Amino acid sequence: MWLLIKRYWKTINRPSLHYSLGFLTIGGFVAGIVFWGAFNTAMEATNTEAFCTGCHEMRDNVYADLKSTIHYSNRTGVRALCSDCHVPHRWTSKMARKMQASKEVWAKIFGTVNTPEKFEAHRLTLAQHEWARFRANDSLECRNCHNYEHMDFTRQSPRAQAMHSTYLADRSKTCIDCHKGIAHRLPNPQSPTAEAGGGPVAAAGNAAPGAMPPSR
Image (cartoon, rainbow, N blue to C red; front, side, top):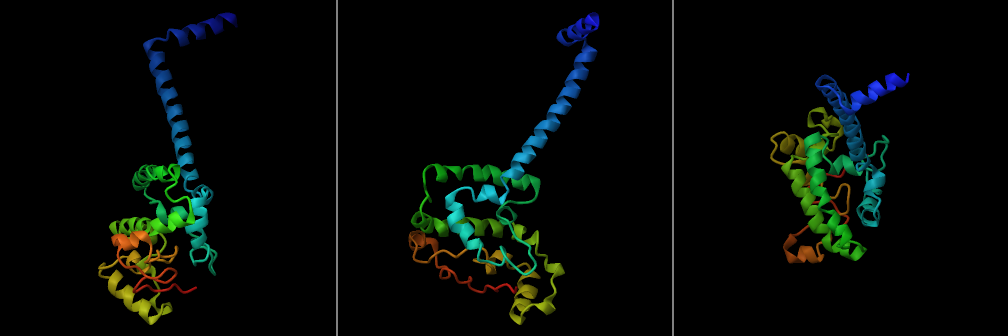
């Protein structure tokens, strides 16, 4: 038994080329699986509602807005989490968004929006960043759940039928163009950022111009 142990110890310490390649291959494969599993677990953890609302800036402002909307509570019991709308589902796009979001940590560190007053002052700027992102990807996160081709127009209001069959069919507009404020309160047009050139927006709490309120 002792000789066998010594033989294995010698092999590990001074392996031949054959054993060295085998150990490296197996070890690298196992290490890769462990790393990939840990990495994806960490990524999924950052997509949870608990993580997104872990800071008071999100919990007391935009999350509070969400709780009064149809995306949070509805007749079917389907709830959209923060990550459903703000994190792309495609892996490469998700990683790009995560890297981009890492820069937003500075706002937390320096207290940029750490009071309700500061948050309201920046609400328009924050909203415009997301609106621009949604326009750029053709409201991809909306389309992960809502599919134009599967819509039953007979169950929509005449106005919604007209808007969807016109603007979505010819792709001249995207979801966010008409559905601003559907999950979060719209920025106050009197906020400092709006006065500084953010442009007119609908009054807080109201739908955006041309918006179609959802039917429960």
